[in-house]
Length: 189
Figure 1: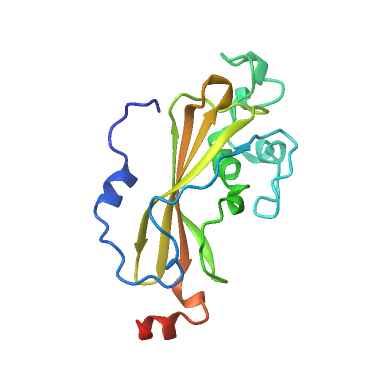
Figure 2: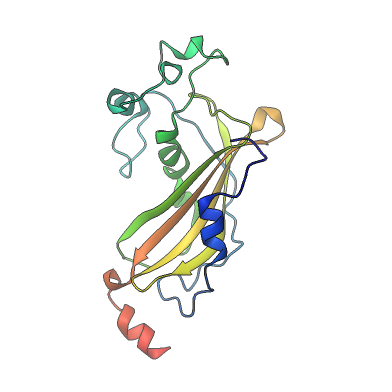
């Protein structure tokens, strides 16, 4: 939390990665790619699309250690006078518009979220507030079975000069064996 913090586990791990040797699924993805800026917000009853078939209200019903500050009724009693987005919903908030980023991942292939890091820089993030969002590919990596692209998503407050509020680092991995022509393309390189 906050702009100054010690090195995180993912920062340390990412430093140890060797550059990938030959990417097939991610061959068109480049480190440094930035998505166009967009906007996001999270309402209690908002439909987040097919990737997240639940609302914030639905999620609040099943969070076992929920803070009242995240709820409709308890939010106004928070130190900020409004409801805050629970950490469990930061992934859905930053990902429900991810297709708009147009990161050129080849497919179809089975994808999964392999790592996730959430940073509250000048947070918290508020329910019902619109934020500016921008994504940047910050690393490519691979393992024996996957190819991964690491995206740093930044949420900025448009009412405060686009001041950085929070960041989410997501490692999206694609299974090599699930890409139909992976073996043939790899052999041809």
